[in-house]
Amino acid sequence: MKDKLRIANAGGFWGDDLKAFNRQIVQGDIDYLTMDFLAEITMSILKKQMMKNPELGYVTDFIDQIKENARLIAEKKIVVITNAGGINPVACGKKVFEVLNEMNVNLKVAVIYGDDIVNRISDFYPDKTSFRNIETGEEFETIKNKLQTANVYLGAKPIIEALKRGAQIIITGRVTDTSITMAPMIYEFGWNYDDWDKLASGVVAGHIIECGAQATGGNFSDWRLIEKWENFGYPIIEVYPNGEFVVTKHMDSGGIVTIDTVTEQLVYEMGDPSEYISPDVIADFKSIKLLQEGKDRVRVKNIKGKPSTPYYKVSMAYEDGYKIEGSVIISGPGALQKAEKVKEIFWERLNIDFIKTNTEFIGFNACHGALAEFDETNEILIRFSAFDYDLKKLDEFSKQIAPLILSSPPGIAVTGGRPRPRNVIAYWPALIPKSEIKSHLLLLPDDKYEIDMVTGFEREIEHKHDEIQISSDVDSLNIYMPADADSSVKFYDICLARSGDKGDTANIGVIARNKKNYQFLSKYLTADYMKFIFKELCKGKVTRYELPNLNAFNFLLEKSLDGGGTRSLKIDAQGKTYAQAFLNQKITVPHYILTDD
Image (tube, rainbow, N blue to C red):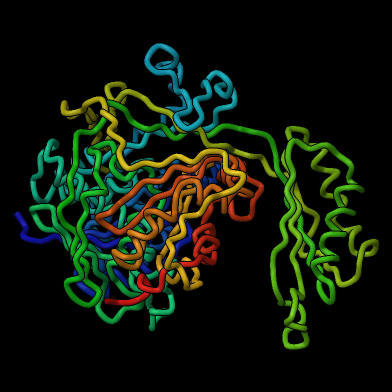
């Protein structure tokens, strides 16, 4: 057994820095290199590609990265694990195998598949599972005939089986983001499938590094602390047999690794922190302890876990109408007033009753530079959007953008050609019993294995919710205000925050800068308060979870993203900017919580 394992991440989404792969290999020693490419939206994009060309449906950029780095991978004996296979992992694996043969590089390639069940729905529904939407409670029958994709979130087990057979490049379809990180730990250290605390450490480690540079200073509230942005460092975890690990990065690379950067990533896209559910284990994020043990080194320990559930999550996508977007930019004196008038003109001329529409005002000053007056907004990008099931309505929308140039207030320019409607592929999360799923392992060129996914340790979850607040309908608010509150600050002065999405729910993780700030915020920053300040954006309830171990809170804002993902007409369809809006709000606090003593 190794006494330490170094697992690096080189990408957190499809479109991330393609050079990070090479930097992680050449700038220091690593044992494993992981890459996470898949989000629900990405799966929809890959499905569209595969419908046009059956040979596609995977992340083609990964092939280029293998071409560039194959000899280094072989020389340094690094194992690469990625979900780049997307909708078509076998095609991706065969392409990698072909490239390696052409380069005369000997690396064993494994493909994990079996997650795609879209053509087997009748095998499961309605007898074996309901496929009810686990977020909305809607019945599957309402979308069954419009289904495009259905992929089971597999866990670490098939990846471990590939490692046992000597695979050096492992390509999966839909697996959980954390499983590509935890699988090497289970394999190398010989952890059992009921070593709950150790498995939970693997989940936490995977969650920290799955989004690439977000753990090393990217998308970080205190971004001004980062002195070096070039050669940006991507995360590496040094894992030990007992499950403890250190988050770090290569020496002299850009970015930083601190308790704050790690904590921001921990609260990113989180639900109930005491029940972070994966196929292999349920991790309790309220048990995590963080220690800064040196420059760019954060130790993570004390993690607790409990048995996984008998179910897999299924990520489904279905056809759900069409949407269209078009934009114009308006500039000069009275830009905001002109924008309001252009908005009015556009929708009145169109005079069509769409299922839903949206208009957004974006911008500051790209048109006039130093010529602009800075005492007011000098320019606004007006973004119009609409959704409907009737393509004829959206065609009429596309014809009304350009005429605004000559028949509306001055200073206007169209920013693109005539907009075109796009098919909406919507997200549908459901559950399926693990006993119904087997995964498949292909060692190229033609060694095939079937893997039983049930470990025998699964249990029904016993929800134990504590320290939870749920908002009421808030029209006005009685704010907690101690008698000695005398200092006006912004939330940024006393906390950090990061936001993301889970379907139509926005997640905002808030981290107090110290224990005094946390104690104040625990009384001030209630679920009702968050509902009140986000009342324009949040149409559902707000739930607050406490993480005193991290001086943090997690807020879930339901019905905040206009349907979420591809269904949303918002420019920020995933709530990525919500944390910044929160941090910019002004509050009054007692002076003593701003001191260091």
